[in-house]
Structures are given as structure tokens and as C-alpha cells.
Length: 246
Length: 239
Ligand SMILES: Nc1ncnc2c1ncn2[C@@H]1O[C@H](COP(=O)(O)OP(=O)(O)OP(=O)(O)O)[C@@H](O)[C@H]1O
Ligand SMILES: [Mg+2]
Image (tube, rainbow over all chains, first blue to last red; front, side):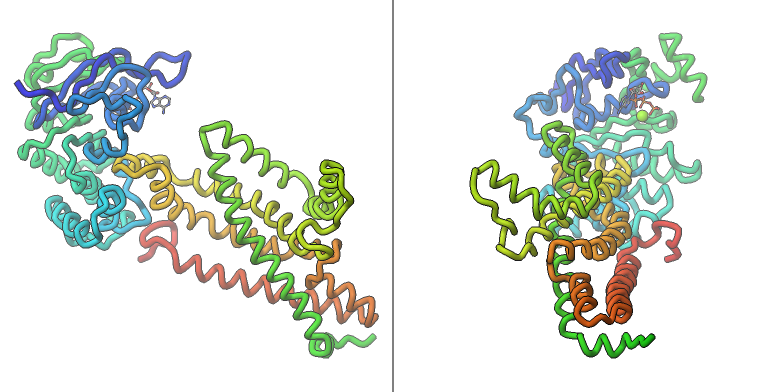
């Protein structure tokens, strides 16, 4: 039994005092090398959950243990945490004023303190991995959506994270561009990258996920292997949701 | 009626030039200080912390909601009185250097343009999509680093055109300082017109000098704007 890389205990997030909380009582863990896919209806709290993990969203209460340490402790170095957790966004969020190369090197030079040469060497290697080494000098606005998202993945990977968070990485893409991004994510899964992925790509879930969580109304309603959840869900809500998206 | 603007410009070039130099000095100093104040003001107003936000808002609103001429007169006449009343000392006109009030008007113009620049900078920063800040923080940049390397360089391109406009306004508005006897270009116009009785020549000349100054500046700034465009971005993104 290995200790989990990430353990979430009684996590709660309430954005506004008089509203229903976005997350009510989340308990889950992610082991090293595990791929966890999170599914659920719009507004159910999937993004909020992912963003609590790297504290883009400040949880209201609960604990988030990363390698056994509570990242919600006031003394925990949040920027240090973020270098170890890569995030890929639905809308890519590439830095529009920087070339592909500099999008990747910014974190390496300014956060990790690497020299420009070292950073560019790493950036080239990660760009090769996402098959975009010829785009190093392009600007984000000159890329297709699929290319932009692969740069987004490269930017996160270059920091050599222990955990990767994907928030609907393919839902802003044209259907024919989805495959290229999914392919890279499957490759990462094979290389035992630890991943939390919010997606509606059930093909990816079947292929790569170790576990699937169904989030409904701020709680994890059901969790299990892809077969259990996707082909034989226990709850009515999960079945309804799957019928709608499949 | 004899108009000889060219002859006037040649004959009184040293007066006009010294006035122009004062105008340029005042404007460059005020623009520089104003930019610093504007950046601080904008970041204060954007801050989540009310102890920073409210002073920012108060500063910006005071200077944007009163006439510049009143601010200049206040600084030159009311402020020295205020200081003398508070500290119970005789009035010293010209707060920093006596008797010239050069630095007085630089301070007022800086505060005034700083308030306008703060609004321009704030609007520029808020025009940058939230995802840019999130992505910057997600790779581990601190808030100041994210501002410096991600948000401000992008906001800069949004901010430059209105900021250039503000600089032009500043030059034109600076003519108001002539009422408190700062020897700027307009002040020179007033004394030349009184001494030479060549009213038409004087004010044609003064107008032409202001026009050449601001017009050439706005062309220069337009060139700079083109140069710093981001490839592929915006409606002119043909490359
Ligand atoms: N910044 C915010 N401020 C206030 N409320 C928010 C904020 N972000 C999300 N919420 C609310 O929290 C709830 C969960 O939102 P969240 O974005 O986590 O859902 P989601 O499952 O990711 O949905 P989607 O599939 O549409 O992305 C929603 O009711 C949403 O309105
Ligand atoms: Mg979401």
C-alpha cells in the first residue's frame, strides 16, 4: 500500500454566503501514477474541485493533503505547490503576448530559476513530445485550437509536475482536433503520470482511467472503475447523465 | 492689418523657446510621475484589500471630479495658507521653491494626470481575460510576477493609445499653469502680447508651436503602437 499522492478530506466550497455550496463534502484520494476521470453535469462542481487542488479557488473548509502535507495550512508555500501541479485549461489560456517557446520557458526561468538555455532545452524536449517543435516561434493566435492545447499541455509538463489537472481540455476544440490532444493524454497515462481529468470523452475514460468519479451537486455520487461506472452505474442520476452524453 | 508670424517667431525665438522648454519640462516630469502614480493608483483600486482600495478610489475621484484650474489655484494659494494655519507659521508662497512655483504645478499636474492614467491603466488591466492571471498563477508565478510578466505586458498594448491621448491632453492642459506665473509657453505669449502689442502674431505663433509639438508627438506614438503589435492578434493580424 503506497500513500496517496493527493488526499482530499471533507472539502467544502461555498462561493457566496446565501447560495448552495459548489462542493459539499468531498472525500477522495489519488494514488501516484493513477488516472482519475471526473464526470458530471454542468455546474456540478467539477472545475471547482480541480481548482481547489492547486488553490486557484480557496476552499471554505476541509483538508487537501499533497504528499501528506495539508496545502491549506497558512504556512504551506502555495507557489511551490503549483510548480508540482500542472494545469491544463479548457480555453488553453496561453499567454497571448509570448511565443510558444516563451510560454513554456516563463515558469522555468521565473519560478524555477533556470537559465534561459536550460529552460529552452527543456521546452524543446516537451514541444517534441507534443509534436510541435516547428511551432516554437509562433504566437498563440497563430495556432489552431488543437495545437494551442498541446502547447498548454507542454507548458504544464515542462515544469515536471507530480500531478496534472485537466479541466475539459478538449471541449473547446473542433471534433477533428480532439484526437490529437487525447492521444497525448493517453501517452502520458501510459508513462504513469498522475492525472485528474474532467472530461466528457468517454473513449479516454475507458482507455486510460483507473477510476471514474461521478460528481453531482457538489458531492461524489458514485465512483469505481470505468466499466463499473460507464456500463453498469448503480445510481439513477449517473445513468441519466450517461444517457444524455453518450 | 499686418500679420507676420514668421518674422515674429524669428524675432522672439529665445523667449518662445524658453517658454517651450518650461512647458516640455513640466509635461515630461508630470507624465513620468503621473505614470508612477497611475500604476500605483490602478493597482490600489484593483486590490481586494479595502485599506488599499479606498485610498486609491478617493485619490482618483478627487482629481477627476474637480477642475484642473481649481487644483492649480488651490496648490498655489490655498495650500500654503493651509500649511501656515496648521503649523502656525507665516505664509510662504511657492511650497517647494520660493518664489517660483514650478514644482508646485508639476506636483498638481502629476496628481491630476496620475488620476486619469490610473483609470486608463485599471481599465487596461481588467480588459485582460481572467484566464491569463489564472494560468500565470497555476505555473507558480506570484501575484506581482504574474502582473509584471503576463498581465501588464498585455495591458500595455491596450493602454498605450489612451495613455498617448492623455499625454497630449496634459500638454494642452499645462497651459493653465501660466495663471500662477510659471513661465511656460502660454505665459510667454501673454507677456509678449502685452509688450509688443502684436496680439495676432503672438497667439498664432503660440498656437502653431503647441500644434507642432502635439501633432508630431501623436504621430510618433502611433508608430510605436504599430511596432509593438502582437502577431496574429486583433483585426490587423495579417501576419
Ligand atoms: N467564481 C465563482 N463565483 C461564484 N460562483 C461560482 C464561481 N465559479 C463557479 N461557481 C458556481 O459553483 C458551481 C459549480 O461550478 P463549477 O464551475 O465548478 O461547475 P462545473 O462542474 O465545472 O461545470 P461545467 O461543466 O459547466 O464547467 C456552479 O453553480 C457555479 O455557478
Ligand atoms: Mg467546469
